[in-house]
Every structure is written in structure tokens, then in C-alpha cells.
Image 1: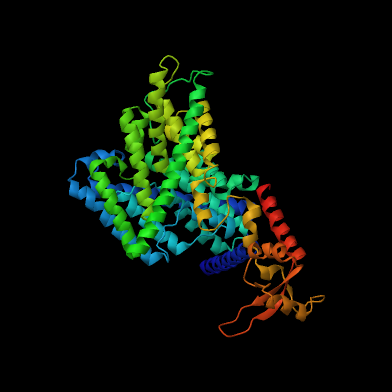
Image 2: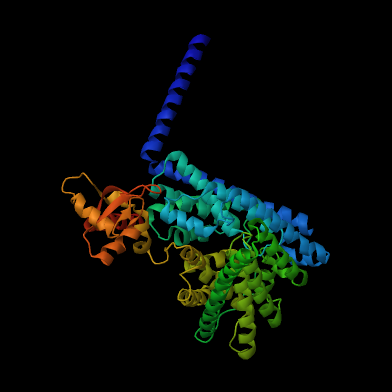
Length: 562
């Protein structure tokens, strides 16, 4: 009897193994079904949530070690009690470590963050660089723990994207599936990092995927909730910031002030963005002129941050303590203005020095200080009709962050989830809408899209501008021996006159040539080595290029409206 039972269990185990192998084969070859994908989204959300939570806890542990902070939300209070030389040297050591890590993990010494995730979603089927992503996470962890003035949302978003990339590779995910997995991971990471499930899901849709397709909403929502649960297992349901007083808006009278605050916040957001890019350009120029080794650039930035932190420790780290002081109205007008300006300088040094980190938390601090300064002036000029100064701080925080991120919807919601105050929605929405509209006229929609534009990646202009870069000439051309192909003599005449294109090029390079040279087809050649003549590969016809472009446009529209 025992022998028969053992034989039966063995057969069941063999069958189960065979069925699992077949299911895995089907999953890799045909992609996951809807229920399977939701389960995968849940697993990815849990993994991204734990990664974000671990990143946050690691920052806290290291900050406590370097700055002797019992409470990491009181960083500048702890730093102000330390010897000045320690406050100065910690960012330098951190910058040196960052430089070494980036030199090992990245070819260009550049930290990967949200902009790279957006690029991966648009151009690489939801994939990002894994090795560079791991190095960027380590670099950002050290930056945020040793006085770098940036935020943690950029690193956690890219960490989550690395997890999604690994899963997409394991299941051989298509472009749509890979992008949806990327959105799931990002939503979970943002939710776990800020205890904001609604904003986490909308951030993934609005900022990373840049569409609100119905088919992607359910799995992204599942992953976002999973990330939030991971956060609340550790921190509970508390909000990041607490407002001591919640002033009521004197409707029809005070709303114009929030319109003006929105415009002011838009200007401040543009100044913040432009300052970061100016610092990057100056850093590049300084590195070329002085021949400064790439590995020492973050250490030089750390030295500048340390010197600034000796006098103004408020700039250290994420800046939640100063943001909380602004939201509770515990700063004077002069303090709010000075700290706002210094934070912009500190963020510019951090980013220009390639130390790592994100832009969301700095935008929150700059926005809260801007709003408080505006509120102090407004309530002093019109005391009878003005509400709470802290309400202006909250609205300014949302307005600057929305303009920097290019995410008015998710930023409006994250303001409510970070503070727990849902009664001031109209004031926040008014300020956010005006700041976003104004800032988008001076930058390419957001800080992230402007970053990509500076690298020659034109995502801000819409799919019609960047989709052509995803279609290779080789996929749309006719081979040289195809029926009805143009005579070789005609092709070589065009080649000799300089009208030809390499088969590895994309439609982005080919399409302007049709208009420039007034031709119906372009010879496609392979460029040999030095001294070797080109080889005719085929021809790219204008009509075929237009068909290929129309096909990818239709596929994009189908994905966005599915």
C-alpha cells in the first residue's frame, strides 16, 4: 500500500512539473492572460514596495549614523548641533563614494532616474538599464544620507523600473505588457514611498506611461495598493506632513490670490528647473576646462554643499523638517525667502554635481516656502479676507511640484494624501493649474521631458515626433532583388550624389530626406570599413515609410485608448 501511494505521489509530482513547465512556456511565448497578468502585477507591486521601503529605511539608518539624528525628520536640528567640520566633510566623503560607484556601474557617470524610466516606457518597450540602475540606486542612497539636497522618489522609481525590466525579460513581455509592468512597479514604489496609493497610480499613468488606458488601470491600481500596504505595515496610516491649522478659503474673494500664487509658483518652478540645467552645463564646462576626473565631480559638489550646510543646515537631505515648518507657519517671511533661494542653489549643486536623487521632494520644499512667503504677504495686506497662511503654503507646495513634474493631476492628489487635508482642494487646484500652464510655456512640459529634450529625445512634442525614431529603415525597405525594385543604376546615381541612408538608421533620419531631395525612394546601403565601398542593401520608398509610420501611430493610439 505504501509503495502504491509513493508511486502515485511520484506520478502526480512529475505531471505537476510538466504542467508548470508547459505553463511557463506558454507564458513566455504567448504572454500572460489577464488574470495571470494581474497576479504578476501584484507580485511586482509587492517587490517594488519592499524595495522602496528598504530604500527609505536605509536612508534613515545612514542619516542617523552620519548626523546623530534620533529622528530623521529633524535633520537640520541634529546637524546644527554637530561640529562644523563634520557637517562639511560628510558630503565630501559621500560625493567621493558616489563618484566611485558611478564610475563602476555607468559608462557616463550619470545617475539614472525618472527621465530614464519615461524614455524606457516610450522607446524600449518598458525596459531600463539594469546595471546602471543598481549603481544609481546605491549612489542616490549615499547622496541622500550624506547631505545631498535632493529627493528619494527618483531613485525608487528607477529601482522599481529595474524590477519590472527583470520580470519583463523573464516572461518575454511584449511592448504593451512591458510598459504596463513598468507602470505597476512605479505606482507601487511611489505609493510605498509616500503612503499615497491614489497619487502613486496616477503618477505612473500621467508621468511615466503618459496615457490613461483603461486596460492598464486595474493592474496598476492593484500594484499601487500593494505598495501602500507594504508602507503601512511599517509606518501605519499616518500622513507625511501635518497641518496645525486649516484655514477656510473666503470664496469669490480669496481665490484670485491663489491664481496669482499659481503664476508665482510657475515662475519659481521654472527658475528651479533652469538653475539645475545651468549647474549641469557649468559642471560640464568646468570638468572640460580643468580636466577634473569624472569620479571627483560629485566630491567637489559635496564640498560646496558642506560649506553651505555649515551656515544653513536646512538644505541637508530631503528637507522634510523645513517643509513641515513652512506648512505649520513657523517661519518668518525673511526665513522663507532666504531658505527658498538657498534650496534652489543646493539642489542645483547636487544635480549639477551628478550626486543623484530626485526632484519631487525639493520641489515640495521650495513650493511650501514660496507659498508661505506669499501667504505672509497676502494675509498682511488683506487681513480681513485672507485665510490661513499655511493654506497658501500647501497650495504653493502643490503648484511648484506640479510644474516641475508636469503632473498636475497626480500632484494635486498627492498633496491631499501627504497632508490628510481634503478640504482645501479648490485652492490647490487653482494654483496647480496656473503654475503648470505657465511653466509649460518656458520648459518642455516638465523637468523630466526637458532633460530628455536636452539629450535629443523629443518626447515632449508627442508621439508624432518620437515614434519615427522607433522604426528602423531596414524594417520598412524593399530588398534590392525584390520584384519591381528600382534599377541598380538609378540607386547608385543617387548614392554618388549623396542621397542614401544606412540600414541601421531610423525613419527620423529618413523622412526629412524625401522632402529635402524630392525623391520617391532612397537607396539603403551598408557602410563598410575604411577603404571599403558601400554595399547596396535595398531601397526605402516614401510610401512604405509613411505606411510604417502610420502603423506605429495606429498601434500607439490603440494602446492608449484600449
